[in-house]
Image 1 (cartoon, rainbow, N blue to C red):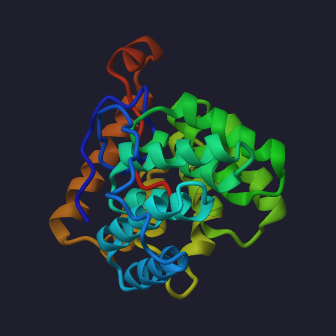
Image 2: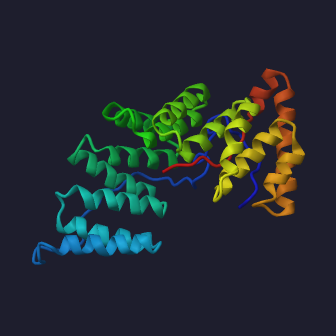
Image 3: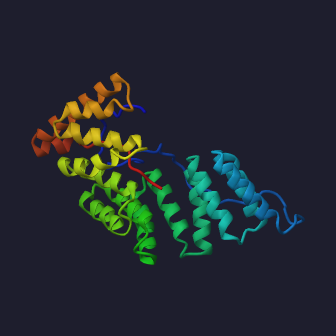
Length: 281
């Protein structure tokens, strides 16, 4: 894991503006591969099975190629398009994934999976406003969709609307109280909005569970550091980072604390916040 570095965060405060590499470019339209009209009707189903096997083996590139072929065989079927979009997103081909999800939405405007997938692609390319619209559409269909509440919260955090983001995470937790992604992102949002003790209270229980993700630990280290608890930040940080990275992060946390202490006009001119790992799914 690399060490975070200071930058201007006024527009983007959560990963992917935050976490995922930003890929530019317009979304292309997917087209069928070749003429498959002579193949057996069940060939598309066979390709889907092979693609899922490739996905389970951690090979999204092969899976995407097979899903693309399955879509070419049956362009009116929703499943291959959704699976193709998810596989492309897994390999960070966000423009192509967004194109697949848009085609799926064109076929079934009420497809929650397609709307969520498009929203996640838009977060990845720093389009939180558009993403927010799509997550809101999902929630109009199902107010208990925890993944939509989570994505909506990340989009709002990226826009600097932290109070609304925290309300979104809490709304998701009301229906899915054990959702770790929602808890991680709530803790991160509290930390970057300045409520450090509340962030610590949310993140500490996550990190005590066996198999806790590194992102949750590093977000806790962030909250400790911003709360003026460098020893605790170092103790948690060293679980995943080497000593130099820990030292760099501690210096970074202190720089952020100094920035917060400056008068508001000076702080606003320089821009401040922290980029850490939001959890999206």
